[in-house]
Length: 104
Image (cartoon, rainbow, N blue to C red; front, side, top):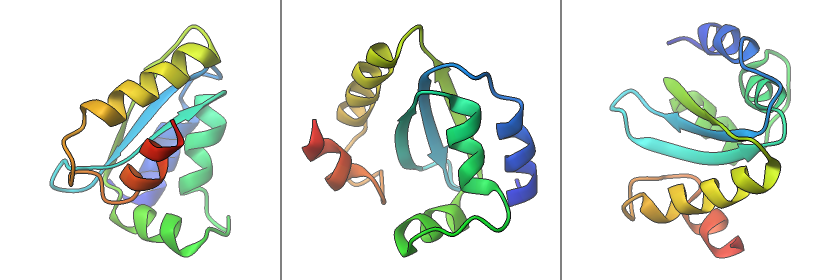
């Protein structure tokens, strides 16, 4: 998918808490994150003209698709994000594994 297509898909997400998983063209997970409002958080990655640091820019350049899991609360999203990161085999996440896993 193109960045514009990803942005359109993100704009259709609910304003609910949840976990999002960004994948590259080979279906490898490149980022796992949580959001208080999925639509706002995920669309920020793909909106034109939004400045990002180098790490995020590289992730976006490789992003091809994303999946979301809607949760009932922010706490549920936090717990689910941690379990998703732990369940992902080491080396499959190129951007988030070291920074997100140690924060938990």
